[in-house]
Image 1 (cartoon, rainbow, N blue to C red):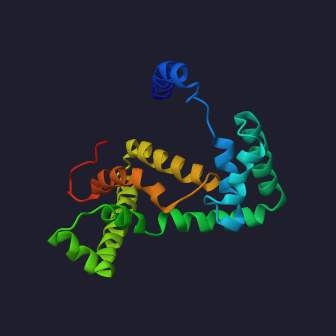
Image 2 (tube, rainbow, N blue to C red):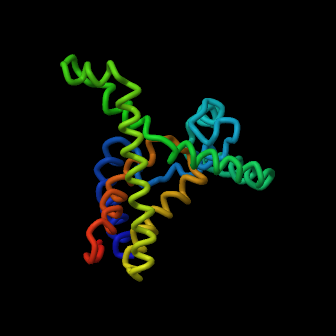
Image 3 (cartoon, rainbow, N blue to C red):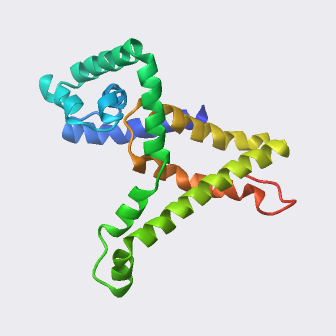
Length: 203
């Protein structure tokens, strides 16, 4: 609760000069719009021009866009719950199934050097290394889950709650492969919990 209170206090303080200078209220959430995109089965819950056109249709009116977007999203879920469940599984695969965005963004702006040319001349090899590292991080985190459960270390539940919250939110919201990247450092730290025998995991 304290974390949430501090977050909202800081974001509102930051918003004061920004809103005064630009007229844009950064505390307003576009969750309705993201929810609409995330429930578009034809686009696999990813960004698409069909949903994006709603902004222009409503003449860029924030409140109207959010209201209509929420209505569209809830109707999609209500009218086809089985289809939405299948969409959620496809979205899990998109977000958690590969690390290609990590490899792509690590090399897209590289300059002309011997090391970088070596990487770009063997894309499959370095992509495989990137994917292997990602899978290893996930496996280590899973192993730590079992380890902490066996050791009755329930303090680690806070990490699982953060991860679970992320997983749940993107079940409904717009998804991209790169959206798993912010949680990777957390999973790396969490995943080391079982490596040193006898040493209890500390958050």
